[in-house]
Image (cartoon, rainbow, N blue to C red; front, top):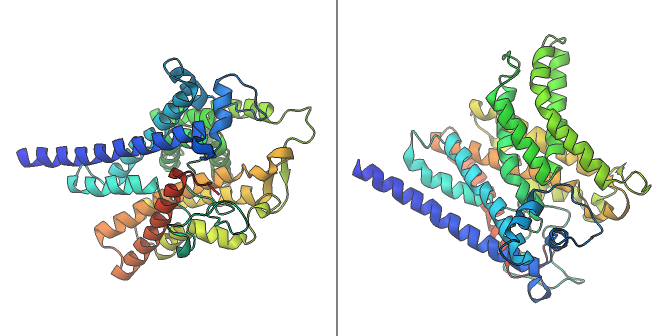
Length: 405
């Protein structure tokens, strides 16, 4: 018993050590972003800072989670510190939620020794990024003719320059996993009130109140899947469709409000446009390559995956989410001054994050069960390591005040 207790305390201490270090380093980054330390650390957070102080800005943010949290901390400290604390707190919640799901899928309760692996994989997911040339590693030059673009047009699962994306992620993680779980049983249930439906509804609502980008994609994917099943079943599942569907209503109401606020009816240049690559082509001259650099790891796992049948539904939904996020980025754009911002990339980046997460779960399970040949496992881990190396390098660029592009 004493040996087990000692291992538990060591594992918990290891997690807490990394967690505190992560909170400290992200707090440092977010604070430097809020004050534009040394005239650097450019991010989206400066407009958010003005908003919590009541200063009018060009853009509107009808998703108040980060701003209300910042306003709360502003009672005790300066606006810059308050917003940095708010971003750190909300982003830090992602670690706890992600660790819980990682422990669950790796069955840490039955195999306590896997806690070390679960912890390492959890934190690794918060640093992976798009791939870029090896020659970029350790090098950064100021914006100009020979600037080394890393993020631009390729995007990352971990955009540390956008605090609202990070603020929404701790709510999007349970929403994603809960809905995948619900897809497996909602047609067999005959309940208008179900605890998982309710938890999903609350998670999705909170995600939308933090940033609606994830919600836009998830609702679209959910609608397509549920309607397809309804039609394929010749409408025999109509009751189950509504029993689950009503839990989207609070989020739909929020989305309508957000759309009206952001895209003012009297502004004829505002709204959503439809055109192939109109927005994305402003940031990338080789979009197929950009997609490959962003999705190399999940693509490798998809092509080399083993027979982890219990994770197949999860992997399929992660790819459905990613592909729809990709389609919205390919065809949709915001009209007017928002067009170059590529705001439909946020849904794609959520897709990247969840495809990485589920692919890593599949790889970890395959490694533990030895269900794949060694060369396949080594190749997949090698690609993941490449994303990790680039991610740590990219984060170090941001931490030194380099431009996120």
